[in-house]
Amino acid sequence: MTKEIAWVLLATVSPISELRGGIPLGILKYELDPLFIFCIAVIANALIFFPVFFALRLFYDKFLYRIPLFDKYLDNLRRRGEPKIEKYGFWGLFLFVAIPLPITGAYTGTILAWLLGMDWRKAFPAVGLGVIVAGVVVLLITRLIELGILSVPWIFPSWLN
Image 1 (spheres, rainbow, N blue to C red):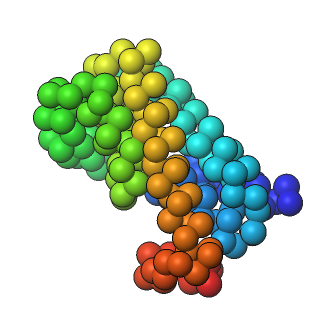
Image 2 (cartoon, one colour):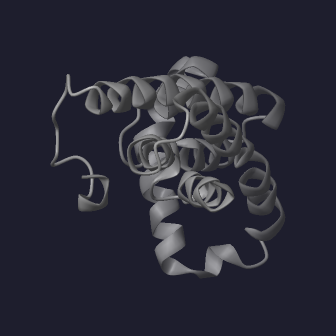
């Protein structure tokens, strides 16, 4: 069971899948307790905020701005997210993270908060609450799939079958 939890945590802290991959992996593939998987996925995903936010603050001016692909990604993210965050502040960041779609998780929410100069004390609760809501949505969809009520095989990779 420890190995399975490690895989769930790895999927959850991965910038590509985040908890959108960790929760279904733990429940559908490894058949672990849904509430336990939800809790560890939400906690792990929310805690990503701190290393990402403070590493950006520490390293961007020294190294990261020199990477063209990273700089282009940041410009694109700023263009997309700035109007919502500027207009809605805390709630805009919360909604940005809460919608479990590609490129709208804890990583991008944290990067967006850093880009826009939000104080981490205001940004972390918004990202954390957004992660909780996204986790609930993913958990509900995963449980509906597990119970056979919902069938969406094109959303999940073949290893979940």
